[in-house]
Length: 456
Image (cartoon, rainbow, N blue to C red; front, side, top):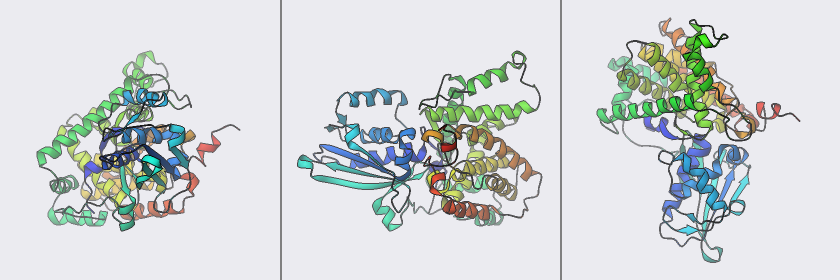
């Protein structure tokens, strides 16, 4: 199975890659496939984690937008609320094929937290014609990171597989390191050669810089925004205030101006991105929405504090981070509903640590060690969002993991690449831990902080 770095880094909207981005894409494809069918009604049935935390993640809203033909990378987030309001007021839903249908949210969206066998993130879309005749139906599974498959591909084991032939194929970190040694390539160089199987080197560099620009924009937007996040928890945005304190340290008596403020900058970058994500704004999956702040925060930290940083470093950072994300997705999961937050924040921490070690001059062995440290110390991390919202503990968790990624990279660079536990073993442990983890700790909001934070 070939996975591109652009499968992991995708421009979209918040708050969730598995509960917002994937369902929107699936619904759009379902609606496009209807073509000229005389549809009178579409029924959406959400299962498992999509049902359990779908309200907080806006899954139903994302599906509706997808049915209208919208895609996460191009939709204007500012239009969603008004269009949903029009539907509630009786306006018809205009399908992707241009056909208007009546749509009643209370009637046409069903919630069933029973998990389907293939994956906990599942939904069934059904289109009906005159006399309630079933015209089309399909089941979709959202796999995390915006990836999804329909029932036919799930039955055949084709979990979004790409059969592209790569010059340096690898399924494990051990294989990746062996290829680097054999061909005397850095990890970023090897990844660049693999990416050329899909597009030219110029296009790769341009698109990665576009990805970084979108990440940077989400940081800047988050640093400016104020107020409370939507969803009912009344979580106050903190990035803007912390940013102002960092810009004007003399006005803030509590802020100690020292080397510790570097960590504050990392924190504020991560908080900014994840507050934007929680508000349903534009951001980049990295490799998921819930963990979207870690890679941008660490890369922004490097660009801010490394005098010799360049655009070439941005490309190398993202290519190397993508290599680690590919390993996590292939051999475990990046879905919180499948393996808990270790699959989201843990994978992102490992990716960021690897990217930083690469641009700081680390050898392939040191880069792999950095990723291993970053992931190892997120093992067992549960996904238990309070209120089903990607806010508590998700936002702070990204800030903590960003600092952890930097520390992992520094520790690895002080060594020679030799270490006791390999990245492959840690990824395998993440997979096994996720299988053993109770479902209430895997993005259902039925356990952990999600229930203990609520006063009875």
